[in-house]
Image (tube, rainbow, N blue to C red; front, side, top):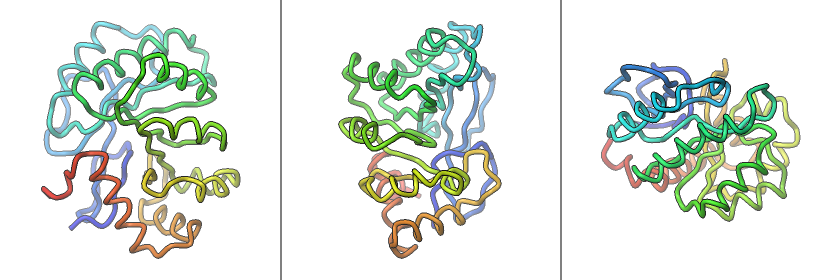
Length: 223
């Protein structure tokens, strides 16, 4: 029975009552076949990336049934890699996500304006997960014009008081929780967010399960 959903983690193993989407980084030759996965090229790894290899591998694995999301991909203006190289890599993921009709999971740091410009230009209608979202109210409102979900970790919420005030402003049907590469468990994250939103843990668990089914077309009904 699934009690908790970890929408984004870099760990492969998880407990029986936790449904985790494990992130696999490109390039790679093989991926696990019995785990729910996301797969992509992180923007930190886009310097001098092999465009054709990344495109071919992503297209190869994106059609696998256990690959639920495309990414983690995105834009990060806090690193030295030129933004145009990051954008080129991001477009590979964007186009594959359109083709296979799977959500994009996005890493975005100091580049929300860039991301919004691309989404507007491309008239993107697919589903998005903004992992580790750290924007402001104005950016939140702009992203809500798209089919976007927002994901948060306990580590992130512990150190960022701005997010604690922003979280209650989010539609609860757009929220996910994650561990990413944190030392905190997904159960600890749920407990913190339950307190911050002032709702029972059982209600939060049910809501995130409903969000998951909305994002992935009722996949939980088959588990």
